[in-house]
Image (cartoon, rainbow, N blue to C red):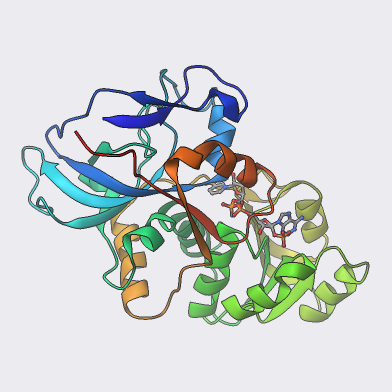
Length: 312
Ligand SMILES: NC(=O)c1ccc[n+]([C@@H]2O[C@H](COP(=O)([O-])OP(=O)(O)OC[C@H]3O[C@@H](n4cnc5c(N)ncnc54)[C@H](OP(=O)(O)O)[C@@H]3O)[C@@H](O)[C@H]2O)c1
């Protein structure tokens, strides 16, 4: 099959198109013909070697942890999927080697869910990593409850856009930070209060949004944004970051879960969730798409169509 690979850590110039062995579905796995992948900041972080102490890596590495596509074959013992099923997956495997910027991937069924019926394959590809992260943080780590005041940093990003929606579903009161250019967009996603972090009045606006401080902070930005958010946490409030370990708070790293992905699919099909703004590019533009992600200013999601001519 064809894939985008890299054989050494480095800038986006290390990404190359290559012919690699097509995987097969082993027992308990499905082989997915991928139609779309999506770009996440973790893709360029892995390419630059930032996660090499966290996970074993084996070159050549195919980047990408998000996939949507069609089941091509199933391994022994698989009864929940059959060839032709439309699926999506958070495709992180124990070893960083086989990713989703490729024509096929074999995954354990524990990572794969049927695609939401109401989403196109392209839109669905942008969902798994960011929606699962937000879902796990909101439900299992921060354990947001109704009427709690929740500050979400990075409201225009992939994870932030789902955190806003998932907190709203629980009847929490959302405040999200973003730059001025994305303020209307973030309000449209459902944030009750939108604070432009570039304004000198930002701190005061946050204090007005949550007199006495926020019950919960969900940080998707890190650095100064996390430090500033911590200053408006109420005494005894909970703070969770997906970027770094906060002082007196929790760092969360997303884990694959077919069950949670399927719950997210149900939320889409019930009309309770919507996809953030999605831009579709060819996987052959992976290098520029990763460079764009690296600016940290992408709004919504960038999806890569896997169109490396024809499949084997
Ligand atoms: N631990 C995990 O499991 C996990 C999972 C997913 C992602 N992550 C990490 O979480 C971070 C966010 O991921 P993502 O996919 O949501 O990223 P993303 O979609 O690339 O986020 C980009 C957004 O961040 C906003 N932003 C940048 N600086 C900001 C600031 N100072 N304050 C508020 N908003 C700011 C930008 O909006 P403006 O242009 O309006 O500023 C932009 O829309 C990344 O570092 C990623 O690696 C971790």
